[in-house]
View: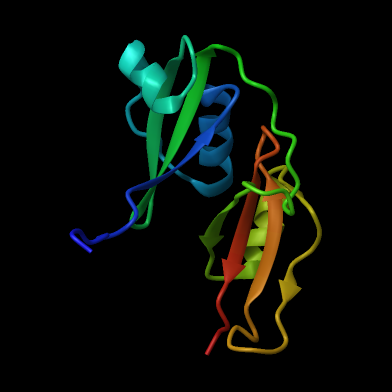
Amino acid sequence: MTFTVDGVHHVGITVRDMKRSFEWYSRMFGFEPGPVNHGSGPDLERGVQVDGADLSFSMIRVGNVNIEFLEYHHPEGKDWDRANGDVGSSHICFVVDDMQSAYDDLIDKGAVFNGPPVTLTDGDLAGSQWAYLRDPDGIQLEIWQYPKP
């Protein structure tokens, strides 16, 4: 190859209302949003393949990765309607240090989980725990705890 990939800069998610999303992610996880930027014009339209694209975007830094939030002001997009098994579906997984504490705290703050934490019982990841939840737009998130030594 003539190039190398040095890392992941960001993962992008499109949200209905950036302010609502920032308030939720800040309340749930303590994340601090960065500055909000705006984009429009033919280069953006071509790049994102959305005619008439007019959007705001901002990053939230989580560890060594940014989560980019995009809010399209025009055209208005469809609401999230994917299931985990649908091609193209994705989720963001946050590593936590204590699954039960994180789960209980998020429940107390109003998070909606798909089910209680699951513990893996075999394989290289045995002892790891995970649980899926949804953000205000229904986007799948996951919390993950590696096995404690």
